[in-house]
Each structure stands twice: as C-alpha cells, then as structure tokens.
Amino acid sequence: MEKEMIIVLDFGGQYNQLIARRVRECNVYCEVHPYTLPLEKIKEMNPKGIIFTGGPNSVYKEESPRCSKEIFDLGIPVLGICYGAQLMSYLLGGEVATAPVSEYGKTEVEVDTTSKLYEGVSPKTICWMSHTDYISKMPEGFRVTAHTPVCPIAGMENEEKGWYGIQAHPEVLHTQEGSKMLHNFVYSVCHCAGDWKMDAFVEKSIEEIRKKVGNGRALLALSGGVDSSVAGVLMAKAIGDQLTCVFVDHGLLRKNEGDEVEAVFGPNGPYKLNFVRVNAQQRFYDKLAGVTDPERKRKIIGEEFIRVFEEEAKKIGKVDYFVQGTIYPDVIESGLGKSAVIKSHHNVGGLPEHVDFKEIIEPLRMLFKDEVRRAGLELGIPENLVYRQPFPGPGLGVRIIGEVTAEKVRIVQDADAIYREEIAKAGIDRTLGQYFAALTNMRSVGCMGDVRTYDYAIALRAVLTSDFMTAESAELPWEVLGKVTSRIVNEVKGVNRVLYDCTGKPPATIEFE
Ligand code: XMP
Image 1 (cartoon, rainbow, N blue to C red):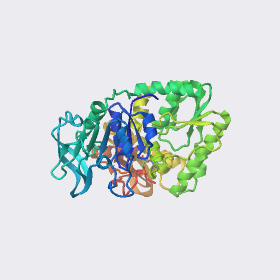
Image 2: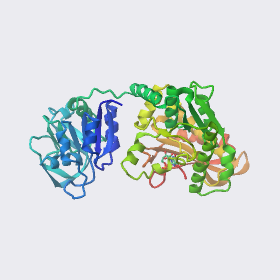
Image 3: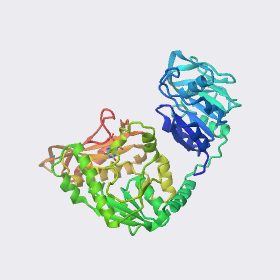
Image 4: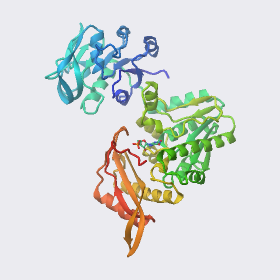
C-alpha cells in the first residue's frame, strides 16, 4: 500500500508496540522493525520519520544493539527515545555516561516549549523515566530542550536536521503529555498528513483482496472471535461467495454462541458467504471423556478441531487461499524473533496440514486489536461481536476443572450467561479486561429448601488487564456479586456455591486451567 509511514526501530525496549500504537492513534501508519533493518530497505520504504525505541542496554557495551550511522544521512527526521536518544548522541559524536542517580518512575521534567517536540506541552510536565545512563555531552549542533534535577540533558534536538532525543518514554500513559509529543513529532517535525484511517484501510483492503483472489476460492476457519469475524466480513465484502467460512461448534462455546455466530454469518445473515456450521459437540465430548489433565485437554481440543476442519475442507475441494485472522502484535512478536510465550497457546492447533491451498491471506496482519475493532465497526459488524472479550480457543474446556462432560458444559454456560448479563446490566462490561464463570471440580454440602444438596461450586473471575500478560483481580461491587450469586444458585441446577477469585496474574493465570 502506498502510504505515508513512520518506522519504529526496535532496540529491545519493552514498549515498542506501544510506540507504534500511539503513532497510529495520530492517524499515521507506523510499523515496528528490528534495529537491523538494512538501510536500503529503509530507503525503499521511504518513511516520513524514524523512531528509535528504548532498550535495556548501555551504548558502550560491545554487544549493544546499534544501527548504522548512515541512517542520519537519509534526510529523514529521527526521534530517539531513552536508549534511542543515547544511541543518537553516541552515533553522532556525543557522550553517554552512567548517571550518579538512576531515574525511575513519574518525574517532573522541565521542557522548552519553543521546541517543535514540546509545542503546546506544559513547561513542567510529568514524564515516565526509566534510565541509569544519560547523555552527558550532546553531539555538535544540538541544544538542550528538557532537563530534570538529576538529568541535565533529558531532551535534545538539532532542529535543522530534524533529530530529536528524549530521555523519557512518551509512549506510556504515565507520561501525561506523551501523546502530544509524539503527535508533534509526526505532524510538526515529519509533516505527516495523517492518512491512516480505518475507512480508507477497509476500502483499500477490499480492493487488494479482489485483485489478489481474482476468480479463486478462499477458505476461513471462523471461530466467532473478533479477529476471525472481522477477517471474514472483510473477505466477504471483497469476494462474496468465493469465500467459504467453516465454523466448528466444538460444544465448548458460551451459551447460545453458536447460534449467534450463525445469525451473523449464516444463510439468513447480512453477508452472502458460504457458511458451513459443523456441529461436532458430541465428537469433542467423546474425545474428552475421562481426561482431566489440562494440557491433554488443550491438545485434544486443538487436534480435534483441526481434524474436523480438514474433513470439511476436503468436502469443499481445492481452495486457493487460506484466510487467517493474524493481527499485528503476533506479527511483531514472531517477526522480531522474540519468544511469544503467552501467545503460543493462542493458536488452537496450528495450520491444517491436509488442506490444499496455495497461499495464506492475513487481511488484518497490520492491525492492532483496537484497529481490528474499528475496522469491524466500519464494516458494519454488530457492536456485541466487535467488543466481545477474548475467549480461549479451547473454550469452556479450560474453564471446567477436571473432566469435561455435556452436563458440566451446560452448568458453566448457564452460570456464565447470568454473570455476563448482570455485568452488562451494571454497565461495567467495558471496564473489565476479561470476566467469566468457571466450574471448579469441587462439590460441597449445601441446603436448599430444607433439603441437603451436594453440588458444584462456580468460581467467578474478573480481571483488569491491558496486555493479558499481567492482570489484577477486579473489585466488583458487592451488589453485583450478590445478585449474580443468588441468580446462579437459584437458576442453575447443580450449583450450590459461588466463589470469587481474588488472585492476580501472576501468580495465577487469567484462565482457570
Ligand atoms: P492466561 O490464562 O494464559 O490467559 O493468563 C491470557 C489470555 O489468553 C487467553 N487464553 C487462551 N487463548 N487458547 C487461546 O486461544 C488457549 O489455550 C488460551 N489460554 C488462555 C485467555 O482467555 C486470556 O485472554
């Protein structure tokens, strides 16, 4: 796609994705690349600006990541953040030293608001600092634009060349005016026009998909999750019934979810695509009978999913393209060669090996999750689907501790539906990262209507998280918990106790198994 672009060169900072997201929030397209990206490639990409990320290293160490100095000869503005600023100084002949005092956390920084980078920013502004090294001497042609009591060069610039260094992290929300600084960089320094808009993306993608697929056939494994749904609708708008969506109902979906997916994508829905729903519930329950080990359960579900999918694909015959709902964070993680520890279990069972196709299409591979959602709304997908919370591939299989049976699925589905309904009624659904009911494997004595019961305990979980790698247990209002509890024990047969999970991640995980 021919569009203006900012490139983020990653030097190992933990916030590399955040920088790209913040830039895109300014309606400017931005890609993250490893710091080893060849100069030739950069020239070819013709970015309007380059941002160096932070990183844990010290520029003088032999093994520290460095880009070539010639990057400064390209005539492209550069913003160095933290380690990136120190590297800029080092490469251009300045000096970096270990500061007598490290700065960590929210820090008041005095900035020179005549600098383009700090236009409209308060002269004293709270920034997020995280460094031990600092720029002790600027390269020639630079001036100081920010300082703190312990960091005399917390900002520097060579305005004529378009080179800016900033010791703080403008990409994290703790830097109160960080978005403004990035906005200033892309607009006042790089002179971007701001052409990254979802409606344009959708239109352009549809055009490109049409061109690529021609008269060919495409196949999509639709899970009903946000990513595959948006990918499905985008493809459907582009190639209509040349797309077949296979939706495997493994019997581990939330209550009524199979029907909801069918209502949107099925023959009576608004999109004219070939929709195949496979009701494979019993097949999965049979395979899971007697299995209690969580990893075995995950594996069985993943493998069975692929088998069912392949069988259906065979019936369809040869397809040219296999469509996947991969999104940008996955691309960045795998592309930069980092271990994707948390993500590895996301891919339910990998790619089907026995489906004959010539190429994979990933229409969302350049989008962040919030952009996928915006694209979904642009495509007219109902809000309840677009803002759906993440749901694990193995579904309720990992929310039922121990053996999975049809009866246990029914219990957890009913309890979860009540929980979601009450959370929505209380108007707090969008404030929570993820929330669900799980079925513990514990039964206990209770008493209902003067009769002894010996029934299951349901556990409710709600977490606050933005990255899903760490999470805090949410403090739900007692009246909501009370209402949910009384409804579950009254309405869901087989449950006589409701517990709330107060554990964060770590030490727990978000899911139960
Ligand atoms: P955990 O439980 O690892 O969850 O803290 C983090 C996020 O990942 C989701 N999750 C999964 N997604 N297959 C998936 O597709 C899985 O096996 C799986 N396990 C957890 C979980 O819902 C949360 O959003």
